[in-house]
Image (tube, rainbow, N blue to C red; front, side, top):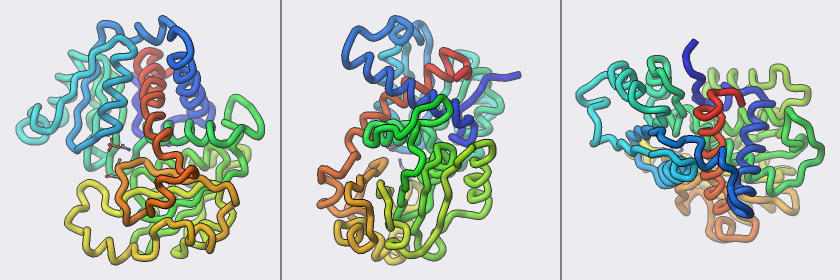
Length: 328
Ligand code: CP
Ligand code: NVA
């Protein structure tokens, strides 16, 4: 059988997801406090990681390049104007050729089928660096951030001890939400999603998120509403993302109108009845329409640790899927 790929958090069991997050935490501590272990700093020695990005990126690009460098390898950034992919060459040909010369492909694409097809024909692990459907590296970083902010209520090998927490997602139902919701269900964290009519979770994605509960003793529950206050009730963490994802720029006017009233503010959190110590998360890049400065730059906000945690998530995913060949 071929290499194991990371397309979505749906691909990993609760125990494997837990281990990806715990390893990210362990690597963060090791690199910051002492000499990093040799296995980390040489794990990718003499290896090249191809980074094929058809869209812009700050965090994913910088964290992946920095992680590969930290691990002794060579990150090779291939932007959309650098290679033949999509313009002059098929996904199949590109995947066979690039995987014959490198140890991993990290790819940011539009349609999820693009990264799935790269993986299908690749002889090396492929890591999804954001598709229209999923953002697994973000979800690993987000759970590392939650793990740091909310001391575990219990410990175990198949979960992070976060059972009983509630996340409220206020805004668009998008790629970042889908993997976050799958992670929440697997970790026993409830997630309430408030989106305007017409911007809810597609049925097939809802089925996938709910199927993440299989085999989990106390899975998190997914709830949906059009009323932000309802989602916010008793939430520990309020989360949002841009209302206009990359590729949706032409819908900007329509979307700004549809999402009016969904901006996260202190007043909305209060009206909705968020828990007293509620925290705020956002994967970034952020625009002021989805969250007010008073929240985004407040002590409640975890956004900058969350962004830094992308580095440790990338280290952990590269160790798990490339160095350890998918034995997580
Ligand atoms: N959060 C995230 O993926 O950011 P970039 O688009 O800057 O990589
Ligand atoms: N939902 C956003 C996330 C960017 C990291 C997008 O797809 O553009």
